[in-house]
Length: 321
Length: 278
Image: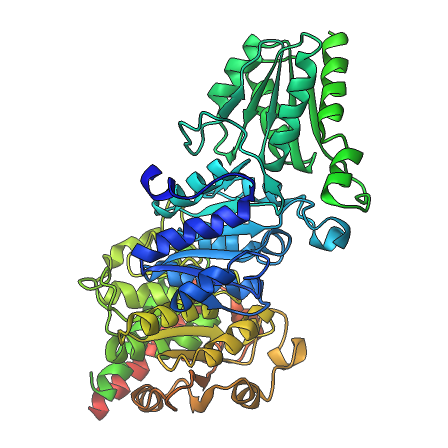
């Protein structure tokens, strides 16, 4: 896979830009690859794709249930289908189609939830997806992925395209830095250790990994060494890696751009508790309330999905041991 | 097959539907009996699909959107050799693949259905793939009249016309009853033909329990080049068993031993009349 994406500069771009570029690379040699959208090619950064490969983009209009059902039919007829729609609509309106037509019927559609979490910021809760991990996790036969940076995005898309399995992959809108200079390996179901540390482990996913890394850097100035893991695959969860770091660290924090209910944090908690791996533990995410209005950054800061917010929680956990 | 042979097949299928529902003590009796003539003509006279070509990308597709009437599909698939009929002895039993809605674990089933309002969108995907690949297989989907209020049907109806999917044929099993009451009392979808026409479909209304009418309609596909076709098949729920016909409680009623015997006797008598006429 590396060979196909090496030519794409993966720095200072939104993950969505990289998603679109990788799809264009794949579409050049694979005429069976189709992108299906629900009037979302603009927000999905797919305008260049559509211009370059007009026969490989299918527009269904604003009809998310049909988007997923038709994508399932196309996939069952041998097409390699990426169904692209805002995560808020895909994971709610089309949920039954995802459950039955894609996952249960085992039609290998790659469901791409764009502008996920609170990426749409001040557009409000109608446009936020803070429930998608929770509902997708509870659906059998679906791999659930939230890439943290451009590298993970490029790998996730090219590797998912090469499988015959259904996926749900979500992206945000903002420009992402490369989180590691050593992008050696990306494997679904295997967390990526972005930073080593022995005092506390911060397990984060998607766009919440960068603030986790910022927190680790701030903690380092106080001589606290935090490990940071990008848990890009929410399901299946890399329990081996979680167990390893739970054993070697004194406390555990999870961070996600998702409700504190049903997402990465509760998935980790469930595993840890059922395996007697109990350490001071905190889930950072969006609480069960009407989300404060503001930009994605403002919402992140408000709820402590920030370097300082995560650092403060880390100190609390470590001091209360 | 000749019309007469198909008529005899329908009676045989009806007997088997009742037999397996009776044995399993579960099933969607009325709807399976209303749609069986449609499936009979499709599988024995129309569809280019059989156990040998089922994995071929060029086969015709049949998706049963009204998945609850799976017993009709099972007896036809067994008859066509997709699996041994003895498998139906396990209908709805613990660990059986032959459950109360179609799944792909059963050979010959295209998609897992049962939740309503899903078949037409998936069929659109199959039909669009054929257009994109420039191949000429056809796609059929069976809708229940009771499932038409699901909005996803109408998203798909718009899309099929938009993409000019004249390789797609929807059949509405219009038996007029759903679990609670007559469909027009639950949610009126009439005038159904005008609705489909206004969505850009070519429409025919036929007697959906009449083998000859079904043959004629399927032979006339596509009804208009560049448009998806819909056959509004007026049927009788519980067709073929006097006390079940047009009776609400037989939506998923299971006959008692006496009722079962009466039903088989009635169908045997129809069979004998057909044979005498032959």
